[in-house]
Each structure stands twice: as structure tokens, then as C-alpha cells.
Amino acid sequence: MSVLIKKNVQIIERNGKPEYAVLPYDDYIALTGYDNGQTVPHEVVEMMVVDDMSIIKAWRKYLGLTQKNVAAKAGISQSALAQIERAGQNPHRNTLVKLAKAMNLQLEQLDLEEN
Image (cartoon, rainbow, N blue to C red; front, side):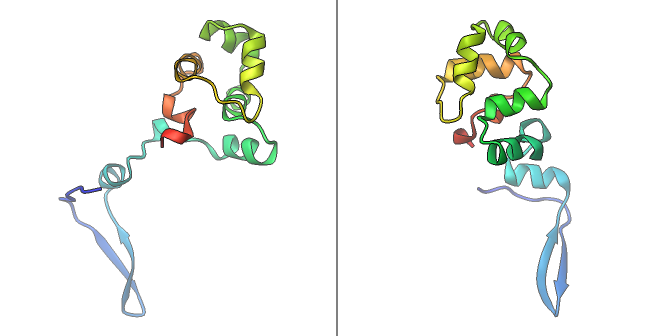
């Protein structure tokens, strides 16, 4: 990843050796590609790991949405969503796009394989 940083970077040393580099937030975003609109909250990750939930189910619960509501917005049946939400399922990309839109998320927030 090659990004030219034009702004000041502050180097913090410990025992005479560089330990941290502090840079403007915009430069951090440019370097990492991370944006607040495309992250996954800790609570969602915790539900995935601790409760063995799929990312789709974890997001839906985190957002306080029902299967019926999300399914209707995505144009699929509630039973299809229930099947998709089972951990280990791998829905088609076009289904992920519909579900992301139904939950007002970015596709990248549902498809961690792409990141």
C-alpha cells in the first residue's frame, strides 16, 4: 500500500528508540482503508465468536431488527433468512447485497472474506 503522507507525523520515542507514530486521522484512513462506515462493532464480533452466530444474525440482533422485517426489506422469505442466518452458511453475493441494503449496511460489513 503506497500513500504519500503530506502532513506532519509525530514520532514518540521510548528509551531513545521510535515506538509510536502519530499521524492525522485522514492519513490513517488513507493508509488503512478503514472508515467508520465500514467497520464491524465489537458487540457484533462478540456475538459471532461467543454465541457462534453468523455475521448476518449478529448484525440483525445488534440493530434490533426482526427476521420478518429484514426479510421483507430484502425481498426474501423469513424462512430463507433463518436458513441464511445459521452459522456456516455462505449466501450468494447478490443475497448479501440485498441484506446489507435491508439493514442499511455496507456490503463489506457483511462479507468479511472481501476485506
